[in-house]
Length: 118
Image (cartoon, rainbow, N blue to C red; front, side, top):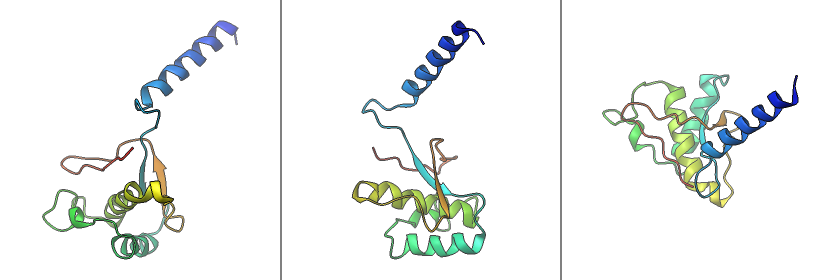
C-alpha cells in the first residue's frame, strides 16, 4: 500500500466525518430497536418507554403518522428514540435492557419523522 493511497484514504475519512458532523460539532444519533431483540423483550421495553419512561407515543397510535409499519420493532424504535432524545441530556441512554442501539442513519420514513435534538 503506497503512502499516497493512505493519505488519500485519511483525507476521505476526515471529509466524511466533517460532513456527518453538525455545525455544533455533534453527530446526529437516533435510538432504535436492535434487530436481534425478540418481540417479547421489545414489547416490555416499549411498554416501559411509553409508560414510566415518559416517551410521547401518540404518533405510533392508529391513524397517526408513525403507526405504519405496524410492527413491535418499528413502534419500539419510535418510542425509544423519543425517550432518548428527550432525556439524553439528563443522563438517559439508549439501552432498554439491551433492546436498543444507536444509529447515525435517520430512521424517518414517509410521514414518520424521528426527532433529533442536539
